[in-house]
Length: 188
Ligand SMILES: Nc1ncnc2c1ncn2[C@@H]1O[C@H](COP(=O)(O)OP(=O)(O)OP(=O)(O)O)[C@@H](O)[C@H]1O
Ligand SMILES: O=P(O)(O)OC[C@H]1O[C@H](OP(=O)(O)O)[C@H](O)[C@@H]1O
Image (cartoon, rainbow, N blue to C red):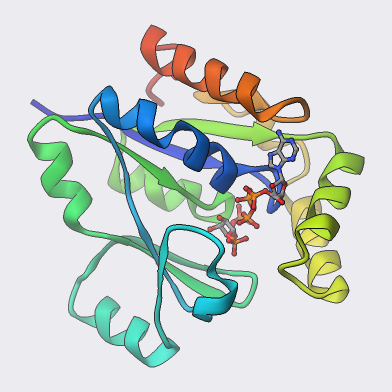
């Protein structure tokens, strides 16, 4: 029996961490794990359920095969611990906060990956990033510029389930849970 790997992606500031936090208990009640990421970000700026490591520590973990998936973006390195393979192997569903830039590689390793793309109106996105205040104004502009690389191409990609988070977070939580329960997140 193999569990489902659900790969949540979306622009920086679209609300991935907020959505995972808000849905965490209900996902757990359904047997879906949310994996803790390893990120080369200072503990002060983590702002999410992630493990902060130095670049040297990240490189050492990567070298010894600690990650099922890993990527670089926004000047940081991100790793998904390989424990997810054990969970999937015993039939547990696993949800990861992924990267749009790493989607093709993730699909190569996990051909049945279920992709959920969180979307948000452009003006709302900028306001949310500014209000969050985790990055400097120039870093925020760089993140918005990164979004332009992806454009709307991903929204038209087969096997990508769109989930809009421009409105209240509680509504997005309900729609995520419904999509997962109904199997609307078709396997790629
Ligand atoms: N539906 C919503 N309504 C209002 N504010 C929201 C909503 N969803 C998220 N936010 C706020 O938007 C900001 C960005 O959300 P969050 O940090 O979860 O985004 P993210 O996609 O995880 O970003 P990143 O990829 O950069 O970590 C936060 O300040 C959060 O509180
Ligand atoms: O732009 P793309 O490739 O989708 O994602 C790049 C990475 O940046 C964001 O993390 P954070 O804002 O640093 O927490 C995402 O969660 C992702 O891991």
